[in-house]
Each structure stands twice: as C-alpha cells, then as structure tokens.
Length: 432
Image (cartoon, rainbow, N blue to C red; front, top):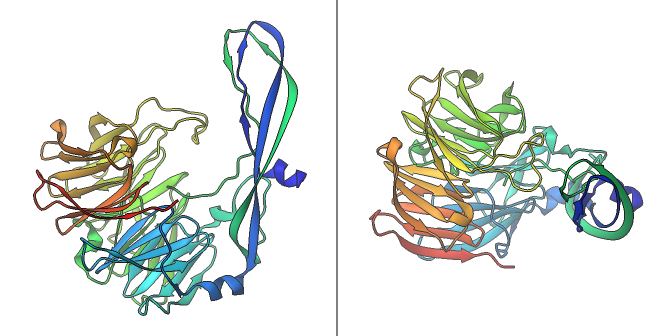
C-alpha cells in the first residue's frame, strides 16, 4: 500500500505559513489520497455490457441525440438511455454498463463508445438486449494513465477504491520574500478525458447519425466517424456501421479536447488553440488553418463565417505547463479565410464550457454563470437575451426549437420556440 500511495498520490497541503526572509522551520500536515484500481477480466466486462434497467443519473457527461432518444454518458461508468418521445416528460429507460467510458456517438443503431484505450461498437437495435459487435483496440493509448502507474492491460479497470493517510512532518524553507507559502509534492492520478454540433452541423442532415454536443471527442460526418484522443485524429469508415474500419491516424499536437464538423471541415479544439482540417478526402484529413490562444480548456463551434471558442481559465493547479490564465472568455474568430483565422472579438465569461448555435441565437454554458442566450447577428456586439441561472450547465444541443442541456443538476430541456420567452419543459435530476 505504501507503494500505491507513492505512485498514485495527490498531496494536499492543509497548512499555510507566512514566510519571512531566511531559514524557517514549519510543521506541515499532509494528506495523501490514493486510488487503487479494481479489475475484472475482459470477458467479465464484455459480458456485462448489455441492456440494464434504468439507474439514476449521478453525474452527467457527454450527450448525444438520436431520433427520439437521448444518450447521456456517466463518466467512466456507462451510458443512460432517455426516451424523449415526449420532451415534457422524458423517461429514463435503461443503462449500458461501459467502464472507462467518456465519449459516444450513434449511427444506424450502432453505439460507438470508448472503454479506456479501446473503442466498442454496440448494437442497440434492441435497447433491452444490446450486444458488442466489434472492438477496435488501442485507439486511445493515452488512457493508459501516466506517472509510475502501469495498468494490467490483460484486464479492464472497473472502479477505483479511495485510500487516505495523514502525516505531520517538519519542513525547512529558505525564502527571500515575504508572502504565503504552499508546498505540493507527489504525482496526481492522471486520466485522459474532459469533462458537437448544433442543427447546422454537418452530421445533422441525416437521420442515421446522432447529433452530439460541443464537448464531444466523437463526431459523425456522412459515412465517417472521427475521434480525437489527446494528440491524434482518427478516421473510421462506418458505411457498414457494425464494422468501423480505421482509415487513418493524423497527429495533431498535444492536449486535444474536442471536434466539431461543418461543411466538410473539422474544427478541433485544444488547450492552446483551434485547428481547422479539411475532410474533402474523408479518409485523409488535411490541415487548413489554426488559431493559437493561451492555455485554456477549449471547445469550439462554427458557422459559415465565424468560429466561437469558449476558454475556461484554469484555477488551482494548472494543467498547462504551470501557466494560469487570468480571465475566462469567449473568442469569436473570423474564418472567411480558412487558412488565416483572425480574432475579431473577445467577451468575458465566468466558467464557459459547451455552446451551440441556433440561427442567430448563441447558447453558452457558463457554469456557475448559468446558461446564457445571446443574439449573435452582430458578432461585434452580442446582445444578451437571457441568463438561466438556476443551473450550472456543461453542454447544450439546440434542435427543433429546443435546448437540451446537461448540467451539474441533471438533464434539462427548454422550449425555445419564442426566444424571448424560453420555457423549461422538463428535468431529470441528478441523484446524490
């Protein structure tokens, strides 16, 4: 157990000291939090992937709209199935157990879902009796975790057990300035994952493909599935939906987060910028232009003329090489010249994450700042129409005069047929 604490630990310092010039001794209480993996054999896990009875939502993640159904990921647990035939009274109808799942997309009754390093194709034609049709192995190698921890790749991790230990020790610091000192040490347990498309997106024109949110790493364009890992874009031919065939893997850089399709182009969000790729040749995406920004969490959507990028500033411990941006914001970028995107306007935000366009109306999930709806006809002068501040939204899909929102509080739907009188239709609440 000592080794587990050393290898997988997040050291939280609970005492702060005012530091004076010279050598100072202090006693510091530290708490080590370690997570021990719980394994099952691959055969056991695959046998457990079936149509289970509905379970309560306990944490909302990625969202996908497919016909009259809503699929909501519960991070690292699986996928909730919501019958949304009546948006005023959606029904939580089932749950598919998929350990290590973060992203989802659906085509022709085939659910594509990551399971740690692998990608599953799951037949959901009968949602009460789903079956795994194919496994594409090692599509997301970064999900192997980092640091000194090495997972047993012959089995799947299905859960983590939390352990804590507290100790007090004396430290000596030499400082030349006066201030408040905080010391941190140890390796944090690292898993790839982050906490796409509005009705105008490229995949919305066919009934066979799902529509995702702007935070998605999976997106469908016609007969192709595109996925992004931490540093790669993978293209799959899914003309035969049950048999996704990997066509190419394109290096993108580092800290890739989201992908959004529009008019045979992919807009890819990373922590340090936006990349635009052509998919005129769908099996071989090629770079067009890019736009760089400071180190933020970063989804992106676009219309014919502009890209909208939300930039959530990191707080506490930064994930970007020690950089810590000062202000969360939304950037609007002119993309009329795809080879040379140009920033034209920045708007301050509180905790911006997912966003969606419905004509001239822009929906922005601003976390603690609520769901904000803007008229974006003039991008140089966005006009705030309304803020819905009783939720902390994470992502949103606008479709058929409705806004489908995943939030800290659960899954919420709004009637937006009158943009000046948006009405809540229904809520499925997260249970603690």
